[in-house]
Length: 246
Length: 302
Image 1 (tube, rainbow over the protein chains, first blue to last red):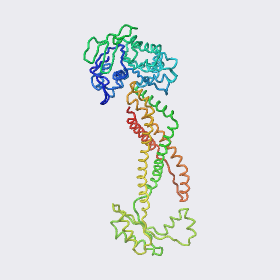
Image 2: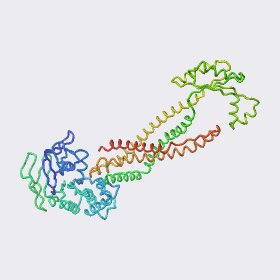
Image 3: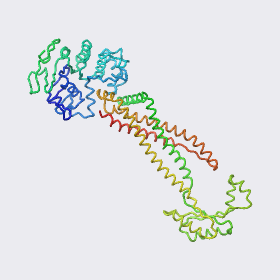
Image 4: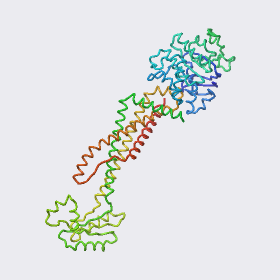
């Protein structure tokens, strides 16, 4: 589903953000991407979503090699990957349902089918009652759920989210994570970047830890290179101990 | 196919929403383009109205030689013979208009009838009309012969009849070149206005464009509403400009009608034909779309 082979990412002549990252994520996995701020979590997700090209290495997403992907083909890959960025990037000049309808308009789906699917997506995230409201009227948690609805309305094979629970209270964060888990249960491969180890341990089945110059994968048993560090498998639910040190 | 049509319908809806959401700005742009377009349209109206008048009049140079009023009655016949014999290879025809026939023709014109009645005798001279054989140096040849014939006896006046037609044609040619330059200037105004409008729209829609790309929009999907914006703005502006030109022609034609009546003639300015106007509207719409495409390509690289 997702495969990184010796991927490097740096911006211009500046410092390297990601160095020699290799991993494979199978369909239906729920992966937690951990690491301190500035370690490259968001960059990793952007590489998966085709929002940024790698500087070096090979990335395969949903059967397509991104380094060979033409500019014309890139939008079609993006339709297969639902993206929720740290900044929800909602459009405040239109209603909640119109925000969810945008990805469907992009595909040229019939209006009645689009509206039905947008309503179903809003229902899934618990925002049915607010479809005519403006996003500005929604709380932080509701805005996050709206961003999720927009990301999943095209029925993507992969869902990536960058800090979706940041600045939310614990109860709202759990509600958001439950929504992700529900999609994961029906086969959507999910990758979430977060700082919240405790919360992620409740939901994720696998974890990556990115630190400057280091990449660790909880699914790995051995150290493949000096840059890849083995992490223990995530513990059972409610026992967060990513990296084995908690 | 259906999907593409739906995307076009969506783009059109987005365009109309954007136009309506900024009514003052949209209206100002429309008026600027419409007023700029109405200038060459009025110029074209003037040309298309004058051209048939020029075409109706023969441009074959003819020369009329008026004899002195006291010349002998056989003088015209002798002059015609001399021209035929001395300049046979340069003239294609010579005809005599006796003064009695000229007076009779003039009397048939109601405008002159009353004036001629009060005259004691015929004030008109005999005349000889000479038609030239066609050739490249026709104008120079006509001028040279007119100079020669002026020196012959009994000749009062030698007049090149087609001179004013040639002047009118030269004026029309000048008008056409002027209109072309005006049209080019207006094209630049239209291009610049649409380019800037689309640029401002693209900048104000930056967030929407970013989100659309995030959810898998192709560049065609992103650009399409801007192309519609350019084409629609120009189409509406062209239609308004036709209305403006039509409105401007009404008082102009009233004034022209009074002037033409004083010459016992009828003349009115008219817009170019409907097919020509349709072609013009289509061309302006294409121009708007092209300018919008150029602008959107430059201003959505983020």
